[in-house]
Amino acid sequence: MTGLLIFAVLFTAMLYAFVRFAGWVRRKGVGGGLVGPIDEAWHPSADRFRRETAVHEQRVMPPRPGDERS
Image (cartoon, rainbow, N blue to C red; front, side, top):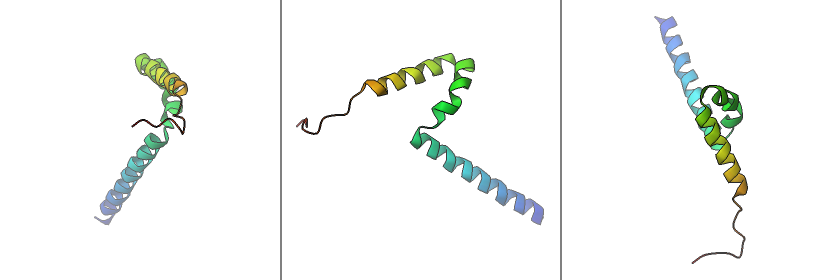
């Protein structure tokens, strides 16, 4: 009985750690480099979309400090 309880607690802690890590990866935007080769082979449209998004993000320039719209 205690073995099952220990397993349940460890399993829950591991799932919680994975959820926290997934949130961190999404906030930082780290996942594209890890999943890129997999997307390129198994999901080409997702790979094309990721590449187009990266190109778009590079083209967009930040607003200049004096150009505030009212």
